[in-house]
Length: 184
Image (cartoon, rainbow, N blue to C red; front, top):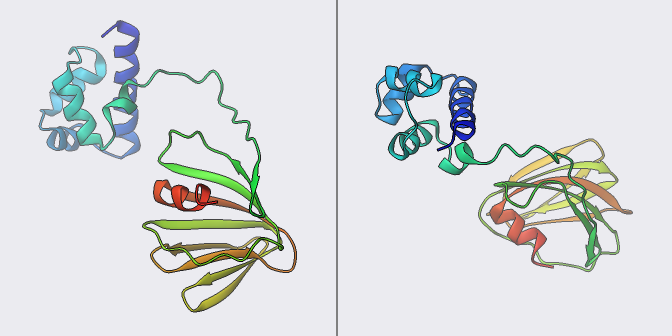
């Protein structure tokens, strides 16, 4: 591992450990390493080998990829491109590689009638403008501008614009992304 990458990994290990509120002892116990080994790894007094990298990543509950990913912050601005279909315009606000997907959606009141969906996960949305009629099982809930809704997606659910177009910001896990953004 070259020196620049080693230094980046060391900074990430220390940063993730401190952000998680873990002491050297706690991370050592989680990783199956001594606290002094963790300290030497973080300070550069110990070389980073594959075995220790995997153990530390497991202890920090992050992927090895997250510790090794290039420090590529050249372009942090996301430039969403609108996609339209079935009465909804969607702008993806996050990069496609993340575990959570944020989207902005404009839902037209004239959107074709759809059936409630069921899929694993949770959905969350915030109404930027307009009103959303959320059908959640047998309940119908009006979610107004400035309000948010969060629900278990194993309950049959459907959201539609009520009385005119509505704009929302939604957060989906990967299951929700597949169900809501690729189902048409």
